[in-house]
Length: 339
Image 1 (cartoon, one colour):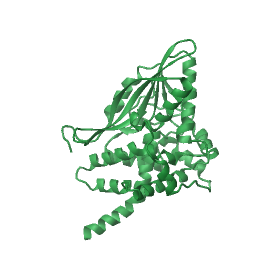
Image 2 (cartoon, rainbow, N blue to C red):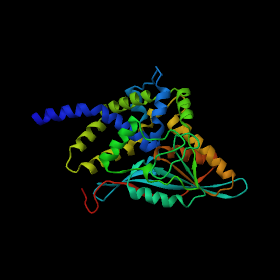
Image 3 (cartoon, one colour):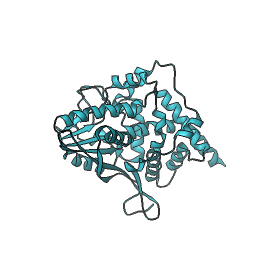
Image 4 (cartoon, one colour):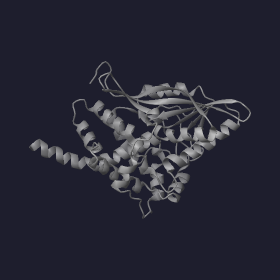
């Protein structure tokens, strides 16, 4: 009885921070909103008085998994159905320009905390491309040297969001993307919004950070009413488990993997800034690189962006799929151990 009371008190204290942590982790891990600019964007939007609220009924009706989600991120399982790894894909598309030239475009899914080996493998993959288009909501001209502390813009990692992300990194014993991806390579090309563009787009589109949080809370409540797992309770239980690190990884991997079905929380009046509008900016840069005669182009964006990017490649560029392979982003079990 004493333990039960202690656990309930702890869970009550953890619920809101964990919910916000899961939201922020999902946003940054799946969609790539830069920690470096999160505080700037929040300050720009801090004066907003109106928030966009979505009801539990609306959430329940709009959160069915969309076709193709498994194509860019998966949880690989063993023969007994136990999770082994969280994987992201590199998916190739082939298109033909007006002058008959064949161009290959690879969508390279990312999660922004992961195994060190995952980022080392990505660095090798990136060497293959004429241009490597990457996401980072940062001012034009921002330079990210090795180690991740950007210069020439507002990209120092010093916000409350960063503190939460660092906490998630510590809990999972995984590495932070900006610390290992080599953005100094000559073929790296910034293909994302500036903080000012991002904030303006959110304002014009009726979006707000507070609105995201309210929607996430509504979605969580709808999931519980619909018999789904409470993500905050699952994470709290994981934190008290014997094999804590891998239990936390598996719990978070499931939440991140399922986040695609919750992308409705990012919707504004005209799509979403986090997904649709940033993708449009990236596609504009892609057109420029194709027009410049490049034939092998990679796009390195959070996995949550890739379904919409694929749609744009099909509809706007008349591309077709031309292959795929997978990379292990997170190990979900110890090596040579099945638990």
